[in-house]
Length: 141
Length: 141
DNA sequence: GTTGCACTTAAAGTCGACTTGAGGTCAAGC
DNA sequence: GCTTGACCTCAAGTCGACTTTAAGTGCAAC
Image 1 (cartoon, chains in turn yellow, cyan, orange, purple):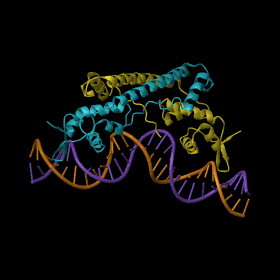
Image 2 (tube, chains in turn red, green, orange, brown):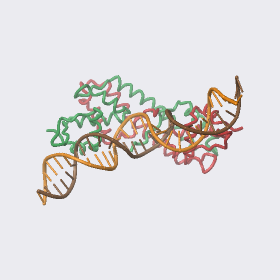
Image 3 (tube, chains in turn yellow, red, green, purple):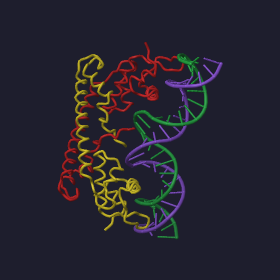
Image 4 (cartoon, helix red, strand yellow):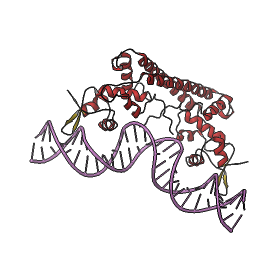
């Protein structure tokens, strides 16, 4: 019961071009062709779901690729997940500080934000890199 | 008491090329030249600090540019800051859920993550887009 | 038997924020 | 007065994850 690429595309929500792209990157594997068309095992849907999760968790496609063992089942390093969770934790802290700073600036009575000490402190943090890597991602598309 | 571009670069930590780039994007303005070299008013350092802050807060350079009034002083829309703070808040929530999911998966006893219900739930959330835009940014350089 | 559509390939284009490279200019130090 | 080094301009290159384009193929329906 293999799935045509069109079916996989429909069920996963990803365009066929993306599936082919993932295949060239080694993230998924097709089990054969029917005519020209790639056929996939149904398990590819799980893999794609996993890829999607990896992406929102901040892994690059290369990193995600490494999480699939040399073939078939995922072999996700638990330490790696922990690391990523820790990184997320730090990021959450930074974002929290940033959010508080922005909230303050938004209701601060100083005529210019530059005259508000809290805002200036925030500016300095940003400049010293203390807040780096904290920015929300502008959605790629 | 204007500053040479080299001085601004040294004090801001940004390479001259970036300062020129910001100038072409309309984010900063030079007050003249000495020989070939751009000279900047000392206030440019404040502006750069503000730009850095804007960036970590997730604004694009274009958005940041719009925050400087047609000339000179910044005119930052307080509503806009609030909006961004709210967006950050949401993002923090998503990241928190993600972090918890990863932590769980990291110590979950299921032989494969695919067999862990919590992990699968997380995968589904990711696929439905509930977690989208949550990823930490891979630092651009 | 031919039309149409979804697929196929390979290569090139996109986005944002820069960085890098080639070729040129200028002020200061020796 | 010549070298050096930091700047100048303009164009092109980089990164990641795709998307788009052009030209071609094959199954299914009419």
